[in-house]
Length: 392
Image 1 (cartoon, one colour):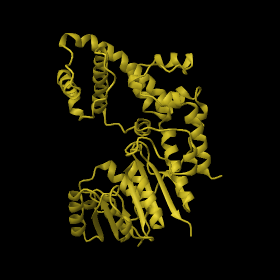
Image 2 (cartoon, one colour):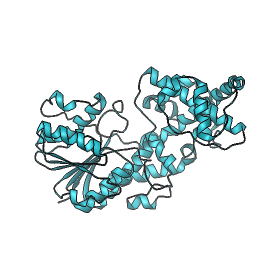
Image 3 (cartoon, helix red, strand yellow):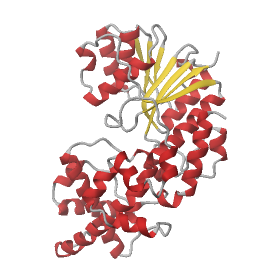
Image 4 (cartoon, rainbow, N blue to C red):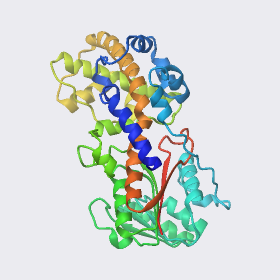
């Protein structure tokens, strides 16, 4: 039995055993009956500040919850972290218009996967930043697939200015044929390709006989199907049925954006709880509001409620009702955050379950597969790097 098979079977059993503690929506849930009384008391002792601190720290998670979930913590593999750096200094002009975090991820990935002269297929390329680094470092011929014409134009113009052998192709990889762009000797690269995009990348690489691919998956919930469609034989045998909401759990950890972002996020959760409570008082079932920019939550509550009312065709509460609703929302938010402390213990196990399913699929197709961490979670929590090389 391969290491990925063992990992998948272990995680699958744990996720099934505890599914009532993670397969729910904390914003609208009551306390699960499965919580042991002592664990229930511990959770209720935490303030909002405690919840934020524990949720952001794997060490504190283990400190507080190891007693109740020892198998969960022991099941998480200690993955090797990539430490390679580019063999030569990269010129400043390659990093133009790239954020510091993204640039570090690009250079780290390029350093640990590159092979001189091997052609590269850059999947979901954007402006082709990764492809440009690969072309510069390894003199590689790069084909960059991207569905937005404006990004293709900007990326191609820049590549031509730099004299790189990079060719952009405007194509929607989920809707249009891509086989003609893949070659057997290519290395297919996908950095933070979301959901269906990284799964389709793996299937297309297999179909084209690509010799190597490197995937850093992201946003597992961004898929067309209502339920997750496993790729591997073990995945297909699993009784777990994962909705898009379940899959979203795997990406609910994020890097800190500083005190201001944390404050706005807390305000957002509070105001959304207030709106949920208002709908419930009107005899209406829960209906989520669409995502909006964080600037909404540095403004006035009345403006947000007017937006929410327009979205749901419901009159917002009168100003005189807001103090009482806010008090109720504060209590509801505290319970939500306390519930999330347990639910979020399963974020990484669920993500590893999904990546192990992908790894097993590639093994079944004749690839040698390695799993590592591209970087520390402080740089990006979506740091799992799956590398596969075709057996000769």
